[in-house]
Figure 1 (tube, rainbow, N blue to C red):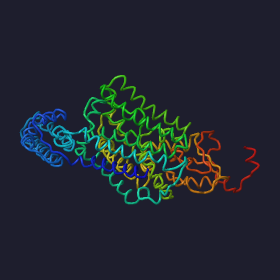
Figure 2: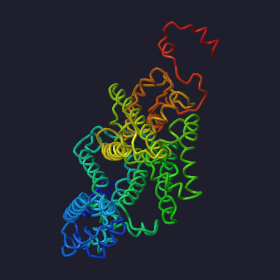
Figure 3: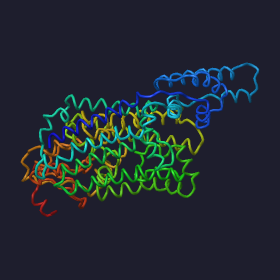
Figure 4: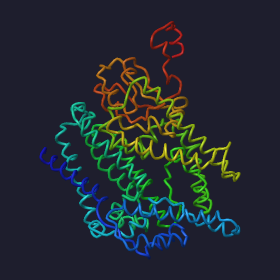
Length: 538
């Protein structure tokens, strides 16, 4: 079995190598027809751009996408300089000045390079995209399964085992973990900030994209596909590791279903049907751009379905979320529905022990996650103010600047680069614990108005510490268990792993009446408490 697993590792690494090296392969030879198509797609009407681009790009073959992007950037810069100079000439009419400013190109060169590069790509990957799909995705998936599936036998009988998680380079911040950290960070940086390098990845997935949404694959289609594939493969590992607990099997299946069907397939099919694509499970403020003007206008212009999506999004945030948290705690979303939580629970499970349990981390968590929530609410308030009044700024600050800042710092850097890239070093719930505004909202309701709690049987606790070690949210579960105190914390996502790894059955996830849910500290410590009064109060 170990030889089979070693073969799996080799095949997986070959798949990763093929996938990663694809971004450096091929050449790019744009034609005039492709430039015309680019201008049509991006709404560029400048004849200056057309002439300069034809001269600079169509008679050249670029050895890499970086060169093509630089050439495009130079053309865009010169074009905009010419139009600005024309607009500032003395004596020109208002119409001519307006036309000059209207010809200025605001599209980012990296986005133009992606479109033109994909259309003009030549070489090994572009001409053999299906082969490279199997050499990258195929080998990677097959190799990972060869390593994971034999764990049914190598791990022995059912039941949780630590198996030296603090003695392996891959799970104790060793060189393998740091390598995974660097790779994930690099992948997210390319995805968010250098989409032109994803051209060959999109070519591999074009057939699937055309089948689902009727159009070519974008970098976000690649991301959605990879998200689903990684969750499926790592979910198999979860099924094997936690096969002794039905709760873990059910919730893993649940997050898989919601990610694949609601977050990936339904939006892609809606796009094919020329309907407003939406993830019906994604609630504000996690879906932070739901109330952006472009989205509101799109939904309003889409007729009945668009209005339904708009009303559903509002009801989901204001009614469904708090009601469900009242009855089931935030676990109904964070551990059973959310895609971020699903990736954390599958891909991130090997690293859950790295979540810091220190008091300092808890203090940072409280200020940071609630600060992001306040930021999201203020940004949305400014956005709605601009939408209804037509003013582009609030108290002297441009609404678009606030949106761009949030999108960059929270939507890209925190949720993506840090939220996932930091799994191997800081644990699998960095985003959920420190940055997710929806988690803060859910946690606020859970702490003060919910029937959910984790009950403990302190008499049977042997203080092994498994529960605290495996708590991905940094809660010192053992401290509660030793005192027999109910666990009621805003951050608890109800994953149930603390209960799954407890050798004595001390912990139990429950819904019950609100009274008595939070244990008074003075009772637990026995300070100035009348036992007769407690008996009378039952």
